[in-house]
Image 1 (spheres, helix red, strand yellow):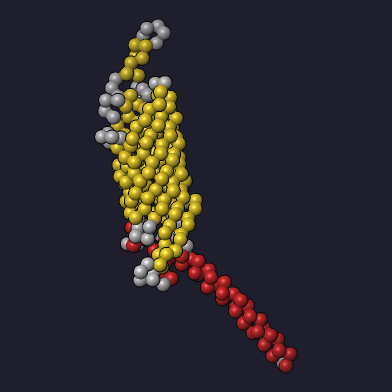
Image 2 (image 1 turned 180 degrees about the vertical axis):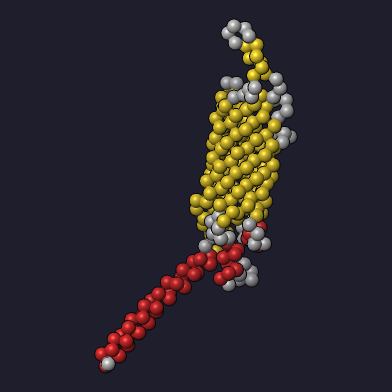
Length: 223
């Protein structure tokens, strides 16, 4: 019985030492979770306009890297500036009634910087392929001189796009998984009639955060 009591006391002592060693690590982990921004997969939809010509744009953003830098405001409340990197895929289209319809698929890299107020800026280079559809009726003449109407006439072009934009992230303050943004892109297609074809395009749209813990929710939960 005396031996069992010694074993029981030894077990309690070891358990106490184990919990004492584990506690600082747990507190450190909770502190890291409190200030570490969460990643999210984002869905994008936007009105896509080339000058005055209307279109649409749909995309998805896959998070690659997130970095948060802490700041203290005048009320000594902890705030975070967030820098995020995403791999993106986008399907875009615009309609030029007297020229062509342009459907283009791109993949790119987006860098987004969000302030503690929720406002953000972003920069994104993209590369992809464009398929134009010539407006109006198009005819084709074969080697025998026969004339036929060609459906879906158009061309494929390699495409490069560079864009920059700004917006507001409602998940920072309002705890809503939505973002509004405005963005300008410069589309480059080559070779286009043996030259380089440049066309600006404007986006006005919404980003929905599909999943992931948002920074503001994590901070509020741990207060």
